[in-house]
Image (cartoon, rainbow, N blue to C red; front, side, top):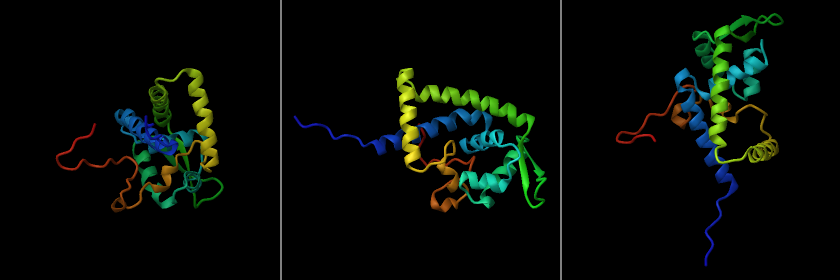
Length: 177
């Protein structure tokens, strides 16, 4: 009897990662935020007063691409810019009260998302999976708690990439599941 081909780990990581990103985006829709927006708010909670330039470096993206995202979050009163006390050329970023409240909602969504993505695993298995994935991420040189997709945000849509908060339109005659 011929054995079926094994599915590679890299494929499984890609498959589950894509599904996870789709699900998190869906869960964030009621807040009208993208996963990238949620990540930036989380980083601002961890590093209050961080400059836009330093935030861009942390995210691995060009500072000029971050400006539109920061503008959008500021227009929604989720974050505030303030002159940097140490360097007048820089702006410091802070969560607003509304931003902190929204981040608390995102935390609830993230816990729900985590539960959904770990469905079918026992608690000990989820802990083991997390430990193994942390090892894989470290071996790949990934920055802890920073999604590598930030470096592609804002690139030209002709290249097939989207900016934060945008969604690809369906082709005529197709629907999304």
